[in-house]
Image (cartoon, rainbow, N blue to C red):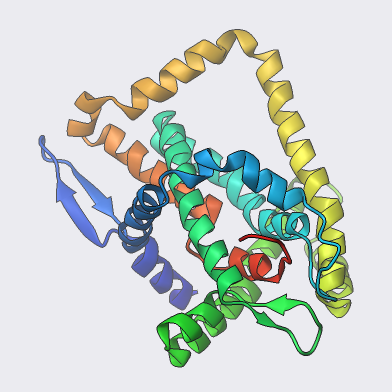
Length: 306
């Protein structure tokens, strides 16, 4: 736990502190310093490609390649797998945490970072497609940051380090966190028995994960192709239901978001500064741009254009 805390503080803790008038200050973390400028650079460098070429990207994602390599996946399947890594507890809990800690203005900064992060994700996916390799074991293609770090940057050791770090992050970090969140959810129910229930829940969870992993990449893709659209559909439907039942409050909500996000008088007091920082941090975490997991799925897609 001490190691996890130390790594978290190194990545997300206040690396530098900027003083503000009034005696307050804003802390900026290492990942904010790295990922925000990267998102701005890729957005400008690609001339807002995500807006200019959005219809074309949808067309490519939905295209059917009749001459695809055996074992490869379609653009839509790659999109689903990448979405599976982005839509989940990080989005649901992260938004609540950001608003609770930073106020309504944090929502605006999450919106902004989602757009900037999309440009970073676009660059990652494009590099994964350009430097992908044919997979001699399972067929199709394989690739991702570890591959283009080695091929384009000629730093094999850095690619190996990245691959190892990604495995540790997901096997020892995200999955353990997911298991913990699932276990803690059952604490509120009367049938929860601390001596037996965790073992039962853990066994069921392990069996479901094993079913996906033993079947290899194709089974993972088949499972996510069903679960992710269903999960995303429920997510959007639930949000729409809440909006419809509170439609009269919608103008007030938007006014509160923008007023809080640009309350410069509060910024001088450090209040809106916290909403900005919380929104930026949660926005970066939720869209997963820069982490390097989604490009692995993008590399496996057999499409006509990255």
